[in-house]
Length: 191
Image: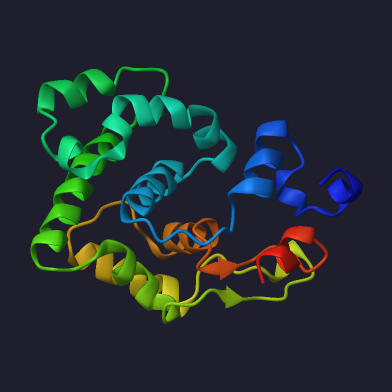
């Protein structure tokens, strides 16, 4: 996007990693259950932090949490998780680290009940990307009734670190909501 770089959403302009993420990943519809599992856990790790912090540590998370394969994560022992909690390649927050295994167990329990994780999540937007038309970052909400409903449903299934604000950020990142500003070339590309 070299010709239109100055028109990108302003939140991504502080680093090349942020720009690349914005230009190639953020808001692109994802329907792969395992990729959505990774993303919901990374969004949970972000709680109280900036997304760039998590992007900078994403490869560390992928390595330590076995590529976010729910079956492999669910089998992780307490001793392994305690060791992970000391690794500087991720955010060392014990509660968030333990939540990944708990979320894997919840994911697998949903699968056993015949619930497809992707279909379940996309149901909160009726299976289609919500196309917003915001012109400034001030207009973008931090949560919506849909993200609150998703949060409550995920918690009911046993997920942790999935509050309404985290769910909204997840919905934006996974392409359930197009919150690129209308001035950003990605808005039209993803419409």
